Amino acid sequence: MTIKIINKSNHDLPNYETIASAGMDLRANLSEPRTLKPLERSIVGTGLFIELPVGYEAQVRPRSGLAAKKGITVLNAPGTVDADYRGEIGVILVNLSNEDFTIENGERIAQLVIAKHERAEWESVKELSETSRGEGGFGSTGVK
Image 1 (spheres, helix red, strand yellow):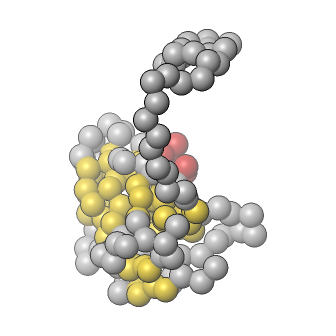
Image 2 (cartoon, one colour; image 1 turned 180 degrees about the vertical axis):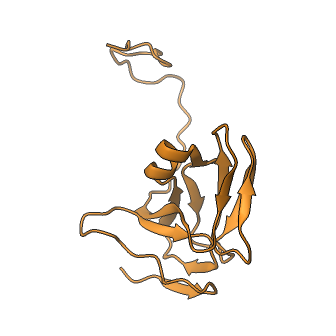
Image 3 (tube, rainbow, N blue to C red; image 1 turned 30 degrees about the vertical axis):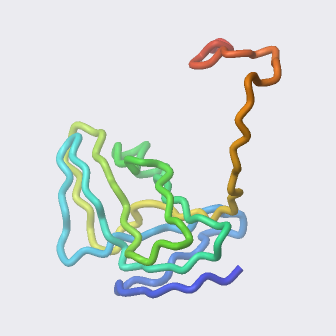
């Protein structure tokens, strides 16, 4: 699949780091470093603008290393970039640690996964089919 992209940053285009990678790293496009205090959030631009085909979305997801080592994650994970959106891809980062975190220009801050999706149509009914689970949710299947 080929996706049209405009890169207004000074960084390379996102790419897959390994042959089996699902996501491509997104880099911060900043004129100066930005510090996130504990529990602070900020939209960090990437300088990237894309044109996805209808029927596809780009999912913005956290990087596991940043989350595990620094407590930095994507607040609305996964964030969705719709096929008709033409603005800059921004990443809503949040600092869930107890320490300040400084984002540097060019730092890999999130990953982007391209995914196909379906459009659903609703069918109003009076009742749903029975299952063994029924209405059980929110941990009803246990933890062990």
